[in-house]
Length: 213
Image 1 (cartoon, rainbow, N blue to C red):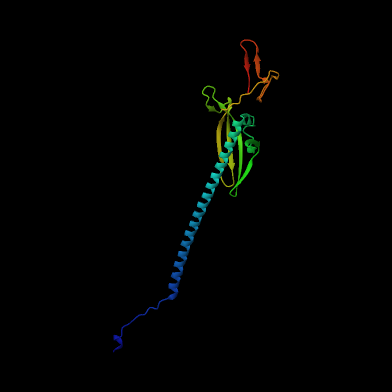
Image 2: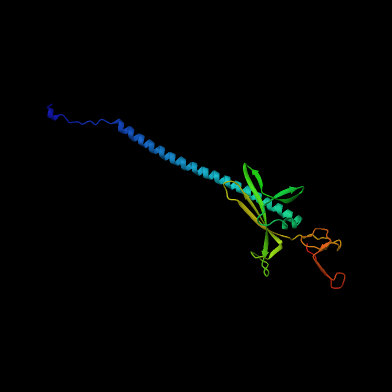
């Protein structure tokens, strides 16, 4: 066969190095995407766990605050002066169980629950009422039969829980005045008592007597 009739074939030899480089690049891209997915997923799980933890701790704090309010309620119902005679607004108090009843002592209390440490305290405030409507206001007309009780519970890495309630003196205790020997007195009376605030024409018709309890 003449040389001019021989087909002219061209052979292209594959280059393994280029193929391996492309596979390596694809692998790196896949690893990067997987790392991003894992990072986002880990953060989401962490946020979810933290949210659940804080939610659980807040439920505990609300329970502790409600418990303190009920303790103060029992103290006030036992004797109104137990809360009315306390230092108002600035002084912190804690609930203390004495025998079979609750009392209030100065200071904060620390309570450990489920590996979390909570700080709880109570403050008492006077309450003013409008002279005509008897609605609660911010004026100077303090109502001796109403007190505002606020309980604050705080713990690490969270906003504190604050609960407040207005307590009313609805259960008054009647005192027996045994004699007039005590003369004119002032302030809160103890039972039984022999003092009085003022008197006019005692023993005569039209007697006028005022007793402050």
